[in-house]
Length: 145
Image (cartoon, rainbow, N blue to C red):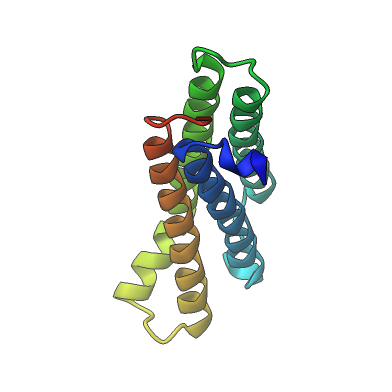
């Protein structure tokens, strides 16, 4: 309990970002495996990027709690790298899904499998965007009191 008492606001924002990034990874895998026709081509790379982002966020928290990051450089670099990885993942997902989305709204609105993949993809993107916002807010706060 004393561990949680000495944590600052950035710890909680980063913890929320970790949970949301993991949820984004899970929903990304769900959207890719829901239909064989709508699979993400680079799913393995995207999952690795998401896992690396989670590890970087956790590493920034760990460095601040162990006293190895007195001036905040390690945490800031880890946050910037995690944000870059998640934004690259978001861009790749949008790039992979743009034809599906345009087809749903233009030609084939009765494609129920496509709509399910679209909804899961939107949930994935929302998780990732909120995780990035939480990391940005957390970067302006202290990790430990």
